[in-house]
Length: 314
Image 1 (cartoon, helix red, strand yellow):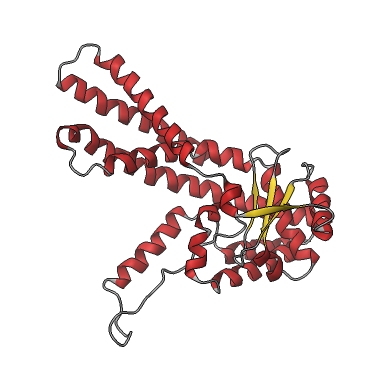
Image 2: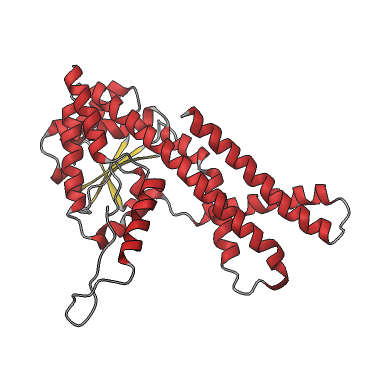
């Protein structure tokens, strides 16, 4: 975790310096006075503007999850389990919300531990068998709350958000003309920073997922229950149509398991539907590379193996 944070700090500094160098070079080229100070002001103003625009465009995660709150009267068993786990982890009892989706979602939303929404889909509740498995999944999500992972990941992902916002805007300019002297180097810089930063944040996110697994296993006293729950949910995700997974892709990184297909959807072509798409091998390889670099969760089989080892040590 320390190495990841140090890497992200270096990426952030490199991004700031890189943007400053681009503006400084342009100002020097046009022989502007006080190029150093002006480039600094433009750099700060540009990044602040990009940051504001990016976060302004984001919808609330609650809305993306498409969930409605429930209470002690409407979901007594779920409320009882959540209350017990929250007490064991020493966090405030979250607001419980249910999503009608069949996709197995389970996520904790919120930056402050005292103002958390626990979102569970009907797909998750139906896929799990018994209170122990449901308790294990809830414990995993509330362990994220205790560890303040939402706050940590939001802060460390700031350079990635800024780089992505800058990249998307400069690449949308079709005919840059004279401004290409600024937009082209900014495009290359922001793309590089985005790839490096997102790779590092993904590694950090995987570390936080493992920590939440371990905390859930400790607080419930049953690593096996979480292992079985993860396997059931993973099987359910594998059976979910790709179009349904795309609908929940915006909350994939927050859920107990990633909500994206392990392989790209393959649609056969030709009159008889027997022709493989062009360069299918390349598209499949690219998809796997993206999962390897940017995957926010460890492979499910690795998590299950780690939990099984904890079970044997008990």
